[in-house]
Image 1 (cartoon, rainbow, N blue to C red):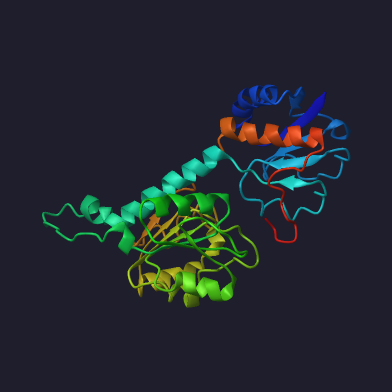
Image 2: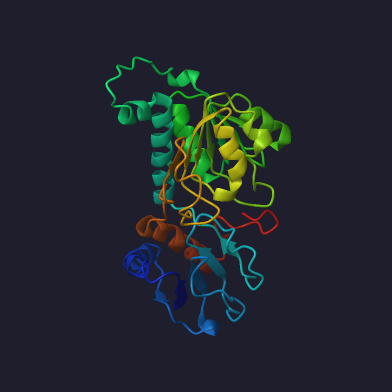
Length: 308
């Protein structure tokens, strides 16, 4: 009998209690799933970083901690967590992120705001460029960034992607290194941020890098709030940036007195770009448990030295 401890909020437990057993059955696993196993009996921990288990040291026989979130910055630095840690790569989360990103890229590309918000009797006849004339840059080419880049390239946008390590994605110009970052940002008209949050990526969009973007550029951030220097962005909105659509923030919920709320060139969405879906996440969790029991390498293991 495999014992799996579920360590996440009460509100998601019913969804996973419904989704995980069928996924385990599909993999031929007999799993005792509970929220209250004794630590010394636990084989796997299915954990949200804000879940009840914060001290992993009692779980001496635990083979892996399976993160329920795509981001691991809130758990990877936990010194008590010495077990292998796997990121969540959820097809449902990926599909949701692609839909949200493409929707907002198209919104800004087509100038939809002007027609929705500008119902003032003015007959506006400004035509948008074709997608092939609108360069888009995506910072971050992991599972989410790569999927968004491929979909936007399919729609005809010239897509440049930047990541800390060199990637190869068909139809996408892939860059790396500091020189590559400057090249990726220079002249970009729409930029999407999907980087992991590390010391190296904090404030990656700052006064210096924001100045590289094309005049009238649009920024879309469904990644992590601290990827952007807030003060530098507010200043850039008065200079070369047309609009910023932000789904993530340094403090969430975004404080009522934050300047983003009332800035006419900022759209705030409440961290809803995408989320882990229990039904599809269960498949990922079951596959990693199957691998652990079969002695195969776990999928999506976190590199502790890189932080993701």
